Length: 132
Image 1: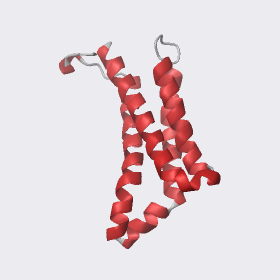
Image 2: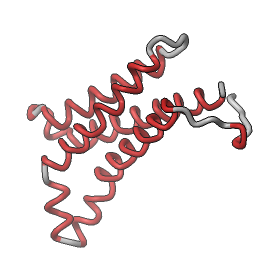
Image 3: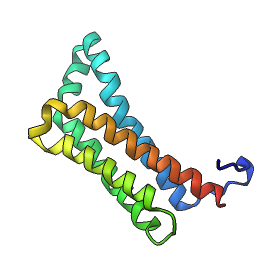
Image 4: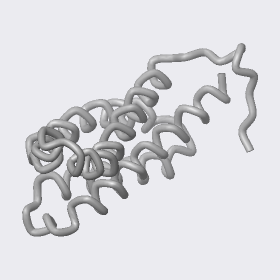
């Protein structure tokens, strides 16, 4: 278990980018989970929930942030788990957003990809902050 004193945490550029990526992944998952509920309540939310543009914009925003963090952490030892999980999560997000053949499974694929990517970045951030 990783433990650290929050007062001694140094938020380096990599940790900030991880937190940004966690935020984007969370936004993506919330979009997939919360918008269908809102769609039942508000017609405007229904249009946003069905819009492919919204899905693609979220993925296009997540890809450069995640790739930058992955690139910066590649030289460090012990990053295989983070890199693998982040790449698979990104792949799932890209698959769901841009491949029409999987459109009937778009929501579960997006939730899985966003969750995996967000958890990978969160794990990497905690690991980086724990190393000070």
